[in-house]
Length: 247
Length: 201
Image (tube, each protein chain N blue to C red):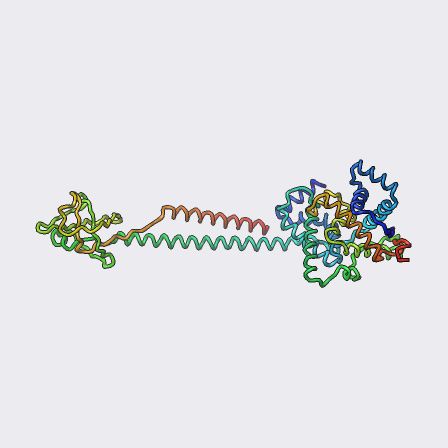
């Protein structure tokens, strides 16, 4: 039974009493409080009230749940199956797209190589006229007025007896071969005598085609393979998990 | 029992819903009672308990041992706080209204040896205590429920409420004192539980 009192103990005393009810006070503190309780009726009354409140709460009976809160296994299974279905389907689709992309890119690269192999031979009209080397067609897009520096050991140099300028008949590059083309400053016409031996500076009377080069990364194929195998493995794993959850 | 519970937890962490349901059956009464005492009406309490178990299942991978009961009750406590927060934003349903509604009253088991009068008094007392609890601040209410209704130790209460022992002690004493005052001042208690001088005479 709870009584009303006009005089109330302090909050600290209430906390002490509350802990005393729960037997949470250390031995010394407990003895000291019991001594005070014997001498102080207000404190004793507060203890009685608080104890009555606690007893009331202890007497509260548990209520019965209106329903069971168990989860529906089929709902969770179907959700997981749907999830894995989406995951595996998405990974397979990604894999197919990736493989298609790799095939398209690699197919395009091969075509470029073929185009380069079929690049026309570069032949100076003068050289054509004098040396009678093999003639070739010259694409307009590749006509670049750039002087060439060629090693005399690699090229056939034919110098005109009357003029200072030389004419080079450039050898046809081997099929699929690449070669460097440098572009130093133009040497003045008629000063071929100052050119160091082994090097001929020419004023290009005829534009020289620059061969097209294809850039192919050495990492392309291995990277594609790694990504492809990874995705394939992921798709297989998703399918295995999907099958397991359906069982 | 502890080994069985551990086995069920491990199986539930593997995704076995039936094993988790066995854990639900172990703790649903306690979780529902906590929610009912915190929220004050059966419908909200049932929804909160269901949400708490659903949340526990989804997060059971995060359970790293210790007391599953504490972990579960902590989730239930947080779920109740969420519901109360929503109620504060949209105060359409108060605890008092819910408690006064007969349909919202919890199911109580009638003792066959109990007279109808005694049953009525017992029911009245339970409703009065519930109203008194509803008048307490949430942080005091939860500690009073866990300590004096569910009978838990301070350490476990501190774990569930994510506080320390000192906070538990002070909130518990203040909650008890406040409930005492609420029950006394509002004449919430049935007559036989009131002191003669409490009716203002």
